[in-house]
Structures are given as C-alpha cells and as structure tokens.
Length: 172
Image (cartoon, rainbow, N blue to C red; front, side):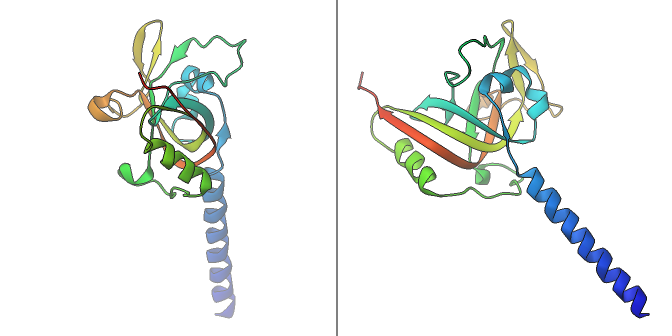
C-alpha cells in the first residue's frame, strides 16, 4: 500500500513539473522582425514573439525601419497591439505593468501626435497577409480580422513592452 501511495505521489509531482516547464517554455518569446512576421505568419501563429516596431500615437505597428535595410519585404500586414483583457478567452499570461509600460501608457495618453518606438512581446495572432496586392487568409479559424471593423490583419496580445522611445511630433 505504501508503495502505491509513493508511486502516486511521484507521478503527481512529475506531472506538475512537466506542466510547469511546458508553460514556462510556451511563454518564452521568439525574437523576430516585422518583415519575418509578414513573410511567414503561419510559422509564428499563436506563439510568443518579441518584435520592434513603431507607430504614431496608438498601438498600430506600422514601421519596419528596425529591420535590416538590405531586406526588401515582399509581404505586409496591418498589425495592432491589444491588451490581454481585451481578448476572449483571456490568454494564460498577464500584462506586465513595469516602468516601460508606464512610459508607453503616458505616450498613448499624451496630447498631440507622438512617435512611439518599442519592443513588443506577446502572442501573435495572424488572420491575413498582403502579398502581390492581394489579401490572403493565413488563419485556420474564420476570423474576419482584428480591431474596429476588422481593419487589422493580425494582432499581438501584449505581455510586456520594453525599450520604449518617444518623440513629440509637430502639430499639423
């Protein structure tokens, strides 16, 4: 009887350890570039990624200037960054609200236009990609797109932001 109890406890501990290690590995982001995401969205779908991008006064990532200038990107996506509480079902991670997040939040709420450059880490959810002037479905599910009126082709569900750089832009 003691042997059965000992074996059961050992098995339970082993299962817990494997689940914990798997969850930690699933949250380890893959470092990539926007162009690489655009060209190979299926490869990164549903995975944690880390990518650098820029925008003006919001959480649309539009800027590939951090990619190698020698690389000509043959695909394009309109990307939006969303917070975990805006996604159903909620992801298995929480938004990290550190100093970098506070800097991003201040920039998003500042009056007037502001250029925001940051490294975004989160889960990548693609729906479509633009290639040769055509919008091509890359998602297995029937998502129409993301954001208001489904205007975005993909999203990053934000876990953490870092290396935030901002610059006020002149009013037009």
